[in-house]
Length: 136
Image (cartoon, rainbow, N blue to C red; front, side, top):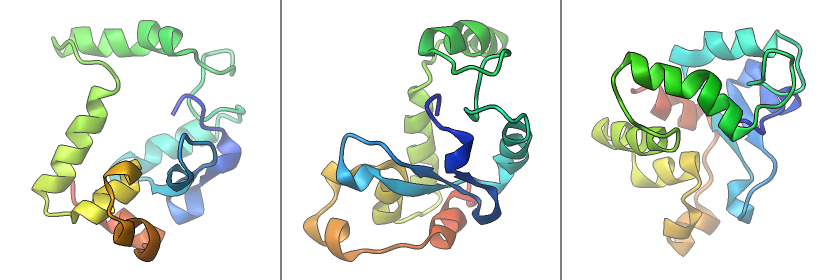
């Protein structure tokens, strides 16, 4: 998220485009859930190059983001999670809501865990992905 540029966000379609990834399947559209859409609109309208950015509009480093925001939130909720832990929670919540494993893998880029059929022959539109994440 810290590398996401506003030019790769499509608010009209409720998604953003991952344009760089370790794998070819990582290049994808990722839906923006309705519950967080207003935050995305606010950040987008701040007219910075990066969607999530430092107060001066420049790109956050991971350390700066954690020091400035993440650690403060963890203190408030008396937790010790790392940002990547949210990915585990996200996947678990989708699974609990009955979202198909193929859809989950497409949303979070678990291409290595996909079968050949899932990788090559399963095409899913953004609306289907959005419907899935809006279940949580």
